[in-house]
Length: 322
Ligand SMILES: NC(=O)c1ccc[n+]([C@@H]2O[C@H](COP(=O)([O-])OP(=O)(O)OC[C@H]3O[C@@H](n4cnc5c(N)ncnc54)[C@H](OP(=O)(O)O)[C@@H]3O)[C@@H](O)[C@H]2O)c1
Image 1: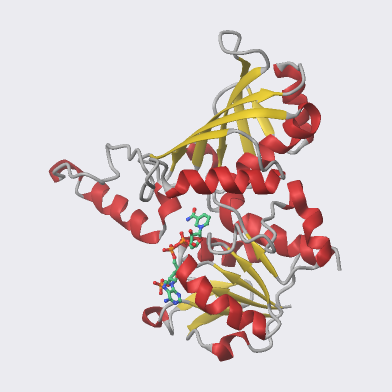
Image 2: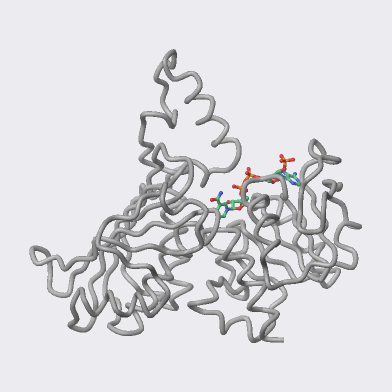
């Protein structure tokens, strides 16, 4: 299979290059591109060392599949040009996620949408893919009536530049003069800009994408999304009200059957970095809240299930249905 990656030098792109080495997709050709600044850089891949190529129309010629690991604006420019050359496109940006005709897919949850062999598939937000993995078994078994999510998102969720900033802050730590927006020793209570109603873009994405993937357009959802001084691995405090009466033990059973790793303690970001699973801990019934109210702590690697791994799973699932 001839595979392209646009944005191959970014943190999602690099993770994808490395995951391709163990993928069921057998790459016969791997074409990588980024900005003109990166053209000519060498990248180690499963097919040996590859050069970063210039991104132009010719880049897509003859490709079967292309992953886009770039911003929404760049995807908007290049995805249609790739599609015009009949390349199957998997986009990691938010650009196409909410378009009605574009499936937004977590294969374990709504992989059946790939049966129609769509030519453009959107990969969800890094909080949403792991969250949907945990909510789907609960929804299927007990129904979801209400949902609250507070996120604790690592700096890698904001891309390479943000990681470089945190690294510089760590190096300069003893001499660091506190400034608003610094990552180290700080918590940033709003990710992206806020709309007129006070919701951040990140919170809107989490609400809309979760509803779309679970096919629950009217699900009440309240989200607070926050950036914490962690390099990699996103955490979430999740509370659900189920529709049917159940128990923490039954929820634990359906999560485990749904390939979620459930433990008694709270999984930490440093423990989930570099792993493929979604982890849930501290699952409990909220006796002091409302009937059928349950809370849990969720952690996953934002660059794996939250990004590159899910994108790759979409491609693997697409081809398995051929
Ligand atoms: N980070 C996460 O946890 C995460 C999770 C889910 C989804 N996403 C989404 O995935 C996408 C990539 O995120 P990231 O975190 O990997 O960002 P990143 O580390 O900043 O990487 C961005 C990539 O885009 C390339 N690029 C920038 N401008 C370009 C242009 N004009 N033409 C071609 N390539 C260009 C960069 O190339 P150079 O290296 O040459 O500058 C780099 O390869 C974003 O849409 C993001 O929202 C990220």
